[in-house]
Image 1 (cartoon, protein in one colour):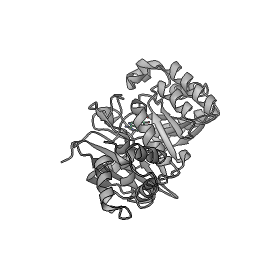
Image 2 (cartoon, rainbow, N blue to C red):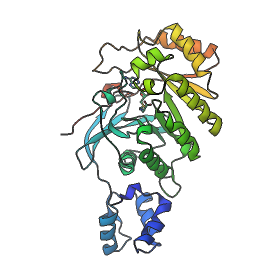
Image 3 (cartoon, helix red, strand yellow):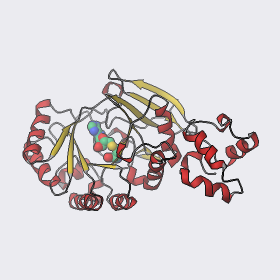
Image 4 (spheres, helix red, strand yellow):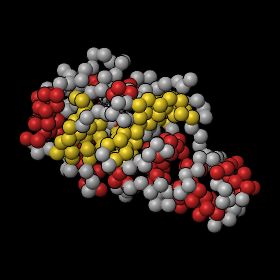
Length: 340
Ligand code: SAH
C-alpha cells in the first residue's frame, strides 16, 4: 500500500498507469489532494464512487488524531499528533509578523542524545514515513496559511534522509502545496553524509547546522554525534556544501549558562565558523528542560557578549528569541509522550 501523501505529484500518472487506471485521473486526484486539501477520499466528490473505493484501498490517506493542543501566551501552538500505531509526534505553529512558521518532526523521539535536548532523552522509537511528515503540515495548514517550515522538531532529519526529503519535495512541488524551497529549512546535528546528498539534490532548501560548542572536547560532551563526526569533518562537509550550492549555512548555537558561554568559547566559535564560506550564526538562549535542571538559561548580557565577539570577527549573527516556552513548545522542549 502506498500512502497518498507519499506520492509526489509527478508520480501519480505513471503509478495509475502501472495499475491499469486511467492517467487522466491524476489531475483530478491532484486537485482533490492539493487544491481541496481532502483528508479522506470520500471528500473527493468529483471522482466516481467506485474509483474512490479503489483509491481508498490502494492509496490510503494518512490519518492523525490530535491528542493535545497547548497554546503559549505568545500565540505559539503545539499539537500532539498520533498516528494509527499509537505513536505520536509534536509539531509547533509559530505566528510572527507576516509569517506563520511550522516546526515539524521527522522521528518519534531521537537517537542523537544531545544532552540539552528533551527529544532525545528517551531515545528513538521509529522514523516517520514521508506521508506522516506531510500529515503534520496538513494538520498545521488547517490552523492558518503556513508560510515557512523548519525541520526542527523531534528527530534528526539526516538520520531519516529519504522519507524527510520525499516529504519536503512533496510540500515544495508546484502541483502540490507549492511552498517555496527557500521557505523550508532543514536542521541537522551534523550527520555528515547528509550534506553531500542534499547538495546533489539541487533544491534550494535552507540548511541549518546545530553546532553548540566550538571544540571537540566540549561538543562531544554535549552532542554524542561529534564522536562520530568531529568538528573538522563537519566543517569540511559544510564548506563542501556551500561551495557546491552557493547557499548559506546557518550555525545554531544554543548558549548554556556556565557550559559553553565564555568569551573564549565565543572567540573560538567565530574562528570555526569563518572556516566555512557563507556561514551565519543564530544564537539561541537555552530553553529549560526538566531532565537537565543543571542546564540554565544565560543572562541577556552573555548573549550580547557573544553577539559582540562574533560581529567583531565579521560573522553575520542573529539573536533568536525562543518562542512558546510556557507551552513547552520551544527549541529542545519537544519530547516523547504516550498519548492517552
Ligand atoms: N536534530 C536536528 C533537528 C532538531 S532542531 C538538529 O539537531 O538540528 C532543534 C534545534 O533546537 C537544534 O538546533 C537543537 O540543538 C536545539 N535545541 C535542542 N535543545 C535545546 C534547548 N534545550 N534549548 C534551546 N535549543 C535547543
